[in-house]
Length: 469
Image 1 (spheres, rainbow, N blue to C red):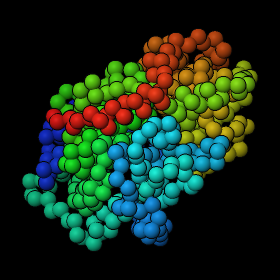
Image 2: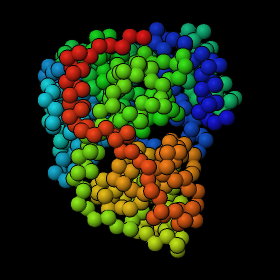
Image 3: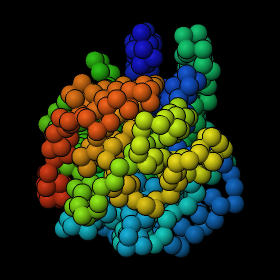
Image 4: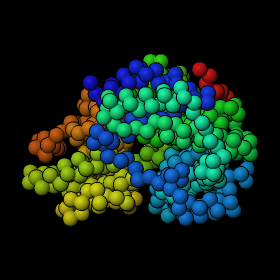
């Protein structure tokens, strides 16, 4: 039985989705992070470097909060039809600006009356930002943290609630041999919710939007709850791979999520076919991926080289980076090897993958050159479970999936013949240059994406409704 199957069995045994504390179904809010902790104990690496304002009390966090009082103050935002909470990890483009790649193409081309909000990324905001109508969220997020630390949002658990949570901890320890402090996690969750919910509701009163648009819904449950209480439909833009084992999106059987967005706009039909979302199919709308579609056009004239591109991620970086070195040393593979780190690995790869430091291959640990430029000049790629592998296929790269924990994410590509599963340099050498891809780009990435997304958002601004379970 796989780890995912064992976890789902644990959920069923304990009826975790029925557990409510303070009238809050707590499991739907901690499920993703609990499973990630279990995965890491089974050898999966850390996806992103993270700094949490809730737990790290430092000078930079205080500076951000003070600066937000006078600069990009969210409570001075204008009234707008569309309130956007974007992705804080921006990419620097050739125009010298830092883009939110999921939202800025829409701000640029859609005729929407919108205001954009952003949380800090690694205790900072990239500047100059492409986004014009931009506000920061420190006054909401960090104010909530301050109130919690002052003890003004305490939540006391009764004996039965404590017993229930400790029972979950004990069984996670017994079944997975992993220590999970569920009690503290839930207590902190409820305290943060108590502090931040009124702050988000006040922000919604200020902007008074017709719809709210988010990138990455899990982790934003309190904001989504505030929207639902105010009668504001929430629309999520797809930001990465969605698959049946992704616990931020998949809610099979009786599992559900009360704080899931009311609509999900996906990149294509593929992303909704095998996943049980907690909303009806008609609310999962394929629109395309504007940033990718425009980038394919932008790099159309780049000359392709005999270059093999490795697509890293923090979760499997150790295994994949060692394999890349083996490939580079394998005499029968006469390709230039480029190892592209995920942005979440940039600041820590030399400590975590020291064997790469002096390796005779090129390591890319910044936004330059852009990933899509690397796709355009490469002839083949190797990955494990990254969204970027699908994007590389859209650039018509010969594609290989390295067989290690996490590769099940890309299994659909292997099954359909768009990629080949490999486990050694010999496997790779035997197949390089001979794969004829079956990848149907329009099935994964709907064409005319910018027009589709702008039209859909405009229609939802006029007609969107809440999904009531």
